[in-house]
Length: 386
Length: 116
Length: 43
Image (cartoon, helix red, strand yellow):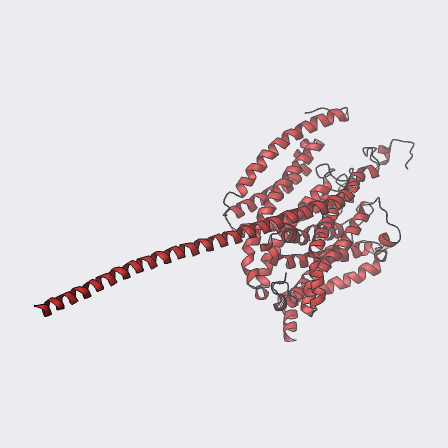
């Protein structure tokens, strides 16, 4: 009991506690007062940071789950096996928080199941996003469930699910390809609202490819944080494997970033939008492309060549920031660029507070689960049974 | 549908929106969905099969290499053993011959001593 | 490079031409980048 009290009174506990209490108050406010009470959303700006950050960025950053399990189970890179569970946990919590945030943003959240049972709307990209995210959340849950089963000691059920691993992984990659790209496809319908340097018929491809290196970078980033705060929970393989993960995933991320850079250039060429690079939005586009794609690509490459773990870690952070920036650019900053500043959107502080609240819940959940379940170590009953 | 007696620009509405219908803008992306669902399983299973095969071949090669190294070591060991045995035999024989010779000489000596 | 394209055909001819040149550049630079990335790999 004292350990629990200690956690509550620790600096993390106090800060998280304040955020959670504030978040709960704002939640009541949101659902009793409506969207206008807590947001700056309007008819012009129907999607704010709950979509731009919590949904779009959340989904991109939760991609570590499918890239890691694909690397281990499809590409056969067994040396990263220990990194699968933490990545799956991050992914599962990430997608859960995405669905949670969706409940805040949508006007009638109790109608969320309607596309599955009342009317599908198969010509809508959003229907496909919803279906894929719902299915993928289930896949992630099932993929992570063995950890809970090991904690509960339910060997037979656990064995059954482990047999499904390859199937779930393949299904997970399919679903991830679909919904990561479809989140980009959501913006295809608004060529007049999204600045031409970001609007492209290749948006689905851009979103999917960037989710891959976002996933690699998040795994490296999460591994860095976990080694700082969960080292006492880690077994030998975990402690020794972080260099392997950083080098391997860093190399992969670097190469994918390079490919992404080239297709972004092709995107500009396809629209013949070179002249736009000289405008102020063009400058901002170059900041994103050169500062947050080309730069981390190069930093990763140098870090991998010189086996400089510190550089790789910073490249990972920078890449994650770059993906956040890209999603915010597409959904909020370069979106509605035509509108006069009076009609442009800036989030209400309550929106920001609720977003922070949702992320905090995720961190708390990660802490709890990683502490009580075999995420960073192999349960003694199941050693070498994978 | 908007109808106006004056150009839309005078009403603050945009005139550069183009004439592409909305479904046409998204049809391409939506059309790619079943292609992914159809082809990804093939590609991914293929990659899995290839990587499994490579692993199996690598393991087989490793086992072969270990077995070859073992047989080599054994043969070397046996060769060394037979060499050593031969050498020991030769040594033994020469030692025996020398001892026999000495004994015979001694006998001959004692005989000549007794004889004289 | 300046001036308006009056037909889609002209627009695409120009942009596709640029893109073909880009493709060649991309292939060579990706090759070079790969060797840079794996330059100091131990095997």
